[in-house]
Every structure is written in C-alpha cells, then in structure tokens.
Length: 141
Figure 1 (cartoon, helix red, strand yellow):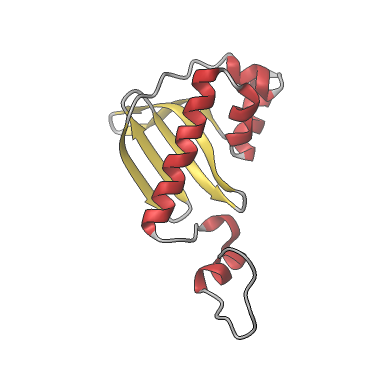
Figure 2: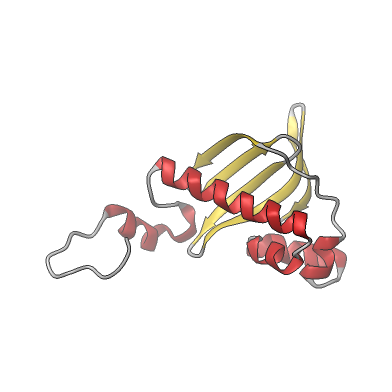
C-alpha cells in the first residue's frame, strides 16, 4: 500500500495482519514475496562481490549480526569480511513460507526472514548435509 488512503478506503487484510503478526509473516502475493527475496539476495551477493562490508551488515537479520559480532568479538563490518562466504552463482530455487525464505544458488544457500523493514539474511554460506540441518558459515543465534 503506497501513499495515503482516502476517506472510505478499504484496509487490506494483509496490512492488518502485518500489524498483528509483525515478523511472523510477509504481506503481498507469493510472486511479490518471491521477488522481494530475490532482490535482497541479489543486493547481498553484489555487496559481497564488491567487498561492501557495511552493506552486508545492513542486510543481516539482527540476531545474525549479533551472533557474528559475539562469536568473533569484532564489529560486523570487520568480522563479515573474514567469513568464508562463497561466490553464490545463479539462483536455482526460491522457497518462501510466510515470513521465511530459502534461496538455493549454484554454490550457496541463503536463508532470510521478513521484518518490518523488509527481508533480512538470517544465514548464508550454507551447505546441505544428508539427513542433518544445513551447515552455515554465517548464521544467527
């Protein structure tokens, strides 16, 4: 919903749900959510390729950033530059489940969550393991 609503306008159920559920869900059509997820992963990967550490930190979910800083005992911008995050390659698959998403790329898997400010990366540098959770280089607590 962009701009102001006029008198007599209808409040969309998604807007009400956003207030009630906050980060538990993401509004928009499945296509809009998917596009938002892909856009955020693309920004994250471009910042990674360009060595833009502050932009990478901005893209992280708060708990992921906190975990990175606590585990390395360094500020995010310095710590994220020391992570062994792969060059991801092309998008192969996108799965969006309400306010959670997984993007499978050629050489990486990135997990995201939806916040009031948009999609944020919760884990990156993730590799699948048979019958076990993903092993991620960067993840939240």
